[in-house]
Each structure stands twice: as C-alpha cells, then as structure tokens.
Image (cartoon, rainbow, N blue to C red):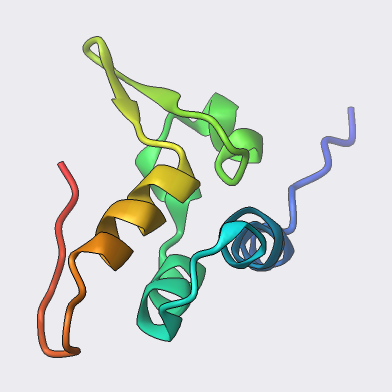
Length: 89
C-alpha cells in the first residue's frame, strides 16, 4: 500500500493564511511563530494529517492540543514586545 505523506509545510502555511490571518490574527510575530511550529510532532502519529485543522486534537492521558486559532489568539492577546518566549501548556 502506498500511503501518502502530508505536505506539512503547505498545511502549516495554509493554516496561517486562512485560519489565523484570515480570521483577524495580525501580529506578525505570532503568525511567524505559528508558521514555524511543527504541530505534527506534538500529536500521535496516526493524527499527524490533522495537525493543522481548526480543532483540538487528543495527545493522550485525557489531554488535547488546542486548536491553532485559539493558541494564536491567546498569544496575540499577550501583546508581547518581541523578546519573550511563550509556552502553552
């Protein structure tokens, strides 16, 4: 069986363009950070193809990774100045 590997770079770029910038996320640092984070590495392998969808995904032990829009909205709301680092837990 020839299983197709998703193009995560394109999926990530589409997420930033349509789900984030397209819905009002305007802070360029937030958009750049979201474009750099490989969400597929933080979820179970069988869900990797859904990493950039606009909904939370289970990561095990009854926990989820938040949907990308909510992560970006929270980061933008912090009104960071550029030297800070953010860890969303």
